[in-house]
Image (tube, rainbow, N blue to C red; front, side, top):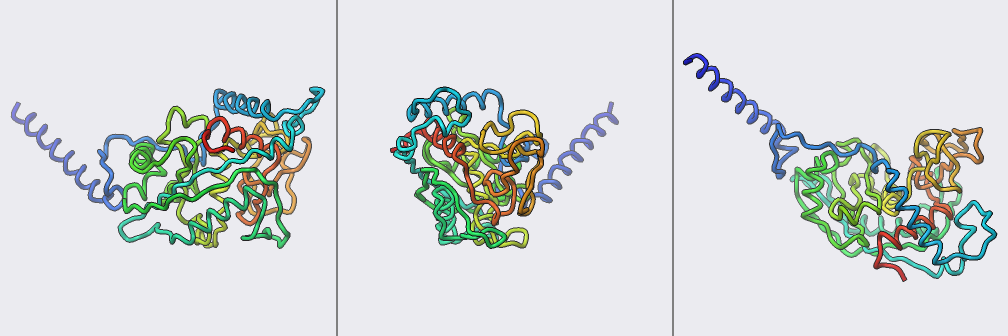
Length: 338
């Protein structure tokens, strides 16, 4: 019995020593986050948004139908595009202005801090890409002039909030528990308010990630956009000066858009938007032409914001995407439309 007791005590002493050793090794990462090293933190989704469910798709389609009925014109019922069914004057009379709170999370050394002027320029870039009126970055990767449509959605920077929190900085993009803790502490406004959190998302292998709009009413605190601080306009990320298009892409998700390559297949429904041709692969770089589904109509929209092409390559939304985003703003981001 005495031997068993001694072994029991030695086992627990060794267990405690290992816990202390691991804690000390990882304190630079976890500092400021209450944790138990054996408590199994839940990893976040390692894509830039959750996989849309059938329920989520149905909610988004209901929102589109509701919005379309507000601005519907008389048709013979044979049109295939939502944009052919709406009254353009009625559509363009509706405007949405979304308030934005920026939360800059940095570590003790100041890594992750971003000057106010870069945040302000990032909002300018966001507004330009949602309005189709470009004054920053008015040429694509090949020197061609860029153009797009006006989505009737604009963004108003309300506040820039800086927080020194090592654990959030390193882990909030990787672990849902840490992400929730951070957002519960910092989030401002209701579902109509965009909260952007910049931190060290590259540690999770991400440029950024976002939540779909239909999730907000049931999970307000997890709503919003997380970005790696290096993706902000004029920051240097992976050796390249950034143009701020990652936020444009993630806000597209926040307003209900899926990837143009959704499903990574030439079969199925793709992104459920009729004027974005189905696409089997994520775009890399900025090809002058790409067609990953040659047996389907159209070529890949490599310039679309919801692809993964380079910043200088992405500058377009389509008419159908505009209506989906306006419908999301109307149904899920209510309270900010005129």
